[in-house]
Length: 160
Image (cartoon, rainbow, N blue to C red; front, side, top):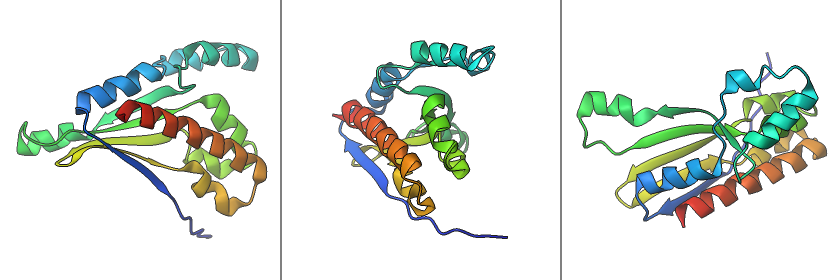
């Protein structure tokens, strides 16, 4: 058994915009494909073409979402702050990291957490480059930094 200690930097931005506005802006910048249909592509070239058509302006797509607030509302009623976890990425970016560092598959696609608090809507993301730094692979790290830049640009635009 091996245990690797990994440090992570969390990118967080707080917005005075409404929860719905922030989520709507993110939704507008990412693709929303039918993932099962996407993975039916007969060849890798077909998959590449399909992905290029399905990503949003950010170059990213939604894999799934979890309305964590729904669980809280069941217990506490409708006055609970909203919280949503989006799993977002690009399969081609993930492939470029995983071929160098298989453990990168634990970090891509990425999680974006959007939650409502008293001081505004917080949007958080764990930087993939910091998660991969300890693996010492320059190629994977370069891809991770590019991914971090895409995600952080998306989140900054959605919250400003």
